[in-house]
Image (cartoon, rainbow, N blue to C red; front, side, top):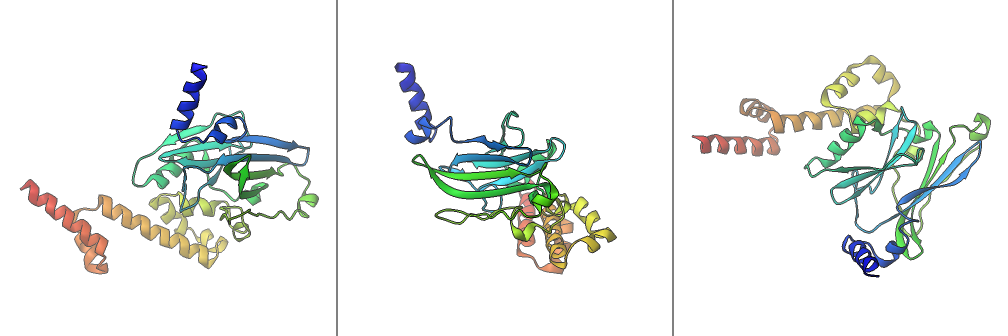
Length: 267
């Protein structure tokens, strides 16, 4: 009895509600609902308590590992990112703790090192549905994933899945109709590629042919931001002064003042 009380206290001290405690075997895990030669259907409920935005105010992010053919889901609790697996549920979850100011970029970089990157899920054969659900008294974020990798093409052409939410709307990433025409490379360069990689990609004549004007504009905007970040973090005082003369950017001016104060304190 004493051991049971201690376990209950530990769960409650870590932010779990009483309902979550007694549903620990049903939520925060991926379940295979149905498996046929045509489709594999997965479902998962994750407690919404203390879930933090993962990427640009989104509370989740799908990543895909092309080598393992595994769909991963990233959720965040405080400064810990957890990668759950849908396609290969036997793989252990991956926990990543980041406290950096650029945590989102570091998170993408770290998961990319082990093969998980953003991708066009619909083009890969996945259909997803995400919504707010109350599961046995616990407020959860519900995920349904259908994997049609092995489905005959003529049947897939007739598939018209919908994405819905209950109670409140949830914006989907990489799975909605706006993204279905995006090439698999585009999300990578939009969210993850380094400044040098993105620069080379934009200089490639094939890039102009395969992307729309809006996509090109988004990539150019990101390249400009990356260059500015590099300038602010790594640029010398002389380089910053030259850049400020051209653009009169207040952030560059602020960085110049910081470096000048540092030099004065050394003297």
